[in-house]
Image (cartoon, rainbow, N blue to C red; front, side):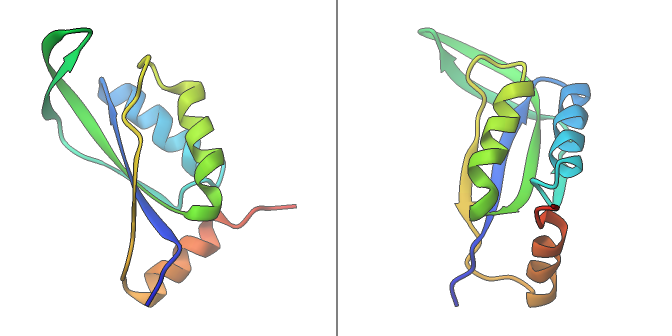
Length: 109
């Protein structure tokens, strides 16, 4: 079964920016739901320096057809110079939940 839905991972530096981005995406109907995790610790290299940061992870549910617009919306409001935006295809899911995603992100005329 092939599904056109995506789960997108995006980290934010604090809860306020996570709330702002999540609200923006849902209000614009680019995402059906955005789950915000408790703080996670990220360890990464940035500009040749080892960094450790406490971040909030967004789990964004949308469709492939809305991805490009969603990516641009994140870039327009995200405080990071290079935000993590990783889309993973959803291969299976509860059919009624997947249908609900479609209903939530339908483009309005």
